Length: 263
Image (cartoon, rainbow, N blue to C red; front, side, top):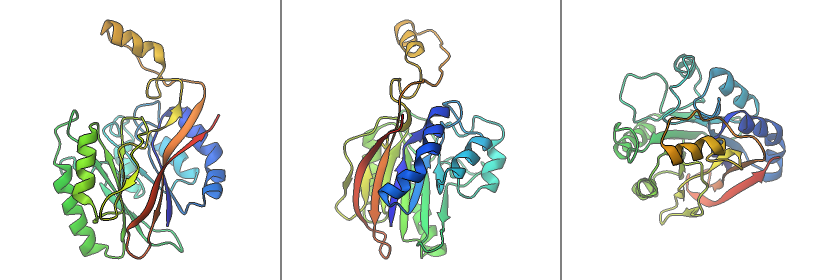
């Protein structure tokens, strides 16, 4: 199976670029499945039910998220009824939504999409390492046919991302980082066949600070005063990674960083 995983989609520019170009990208790259992180797809911070529906309509097969998924009021109920959208599994029990899901498309093997969030320089939530172990045990028991297992690790620190990659090496198909919006140059196969990349980057404006307008962020750095951030305009690029995975074993065969200059 060939999978394209898009980094954090940022605001309307990111959504528009995905909508315009994804059909042609699917064909050109011969991908079977498209996944994306969408936690910043609505207004650059958070995700609405309408925004999620718009992304699914582009042909994206599964969406993951992160710490900003709770911003909009309509999202908790939407997460309850939309099995293709995940939120970090290591939030404490009792919250709406699901931390992992199994995507099934006709003619393709099932794919488990697992969403976790880091704790270094982020919220002090439950342990992502132990949560991953528990999810894999549950998958082994309830979804043994889902050999392909992809993890979106929404985290700040590259050390924590690398640590999870090594912790799960040989037990999942891929550990892919999101959250920083900066595509890293470390896509590789780990020793036991798990694909790893510290951060997929973003789908959003390139002349920006992580997708946001430059001047308000510069003023905040210079003055420390509160500023209202807005999604930037101008040229847009889509970034992520393309993975080739063995259908029978779930072991990754290859991974490479991917970039597309949209407009």
